[in-house]
Amino acid sequence: MKTLKRKVLIIVFMLGTFINYANNSAFDNLFDTKKVIVEFNNVKKGNTLLIKDEEGSQLHSENINKQGKLVKTFDFSELENGNYSLELDKDFEIVIQFITIKNDMVTFNEEDNKIIFKPVIRTKDNKVFISKNTFDQKPLEISIYYNNEIIYSETATSNAILNRIYSLNKEIKGDYLVSISNNGRNYTSKFNY
Image (cartoon, rainbow, N blue to C red; front, side, top):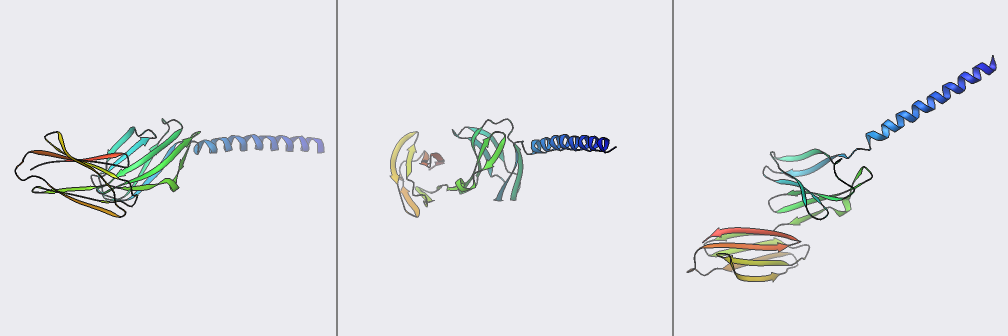
């Protein structure tokens, strides 16, 4: 009788172990997905959310339709192992979050997150105003074009805030373009004077 009880106890213990193993494997698969929740604060209607790979190729783009906090769930199951960025392109800045996908796990690299301040280009009459927060102290390559021909170019640097005013010849009216390169990105503004 004692032998029968021991055999039953061993069988129950083994079944419990198998069931526990099966449940743990299913449980692990729940976290083995590439679905993640992404949050950005202070978004505005018209901002753009981008997903890029480490070469800078754009994989996803969408315009934001509401103001406030943005909370989205993304399924990255189609993406290969590697580094990616989620970029919120706002009026005067680009907020960048970095993620790494490795072995079906998504990791946020919060220590690498950054904000890039965009240059502001304004025009009034024959004046072009350019300003930018330059906390990163990266130079700005500024070029001004008239009818698709470059008429002025300079590399500008500053330690805090860059402010430039350019006066165009009042007698030469037509189509102008201001092009600025900074942090590996290009910003342009077309205007007619």
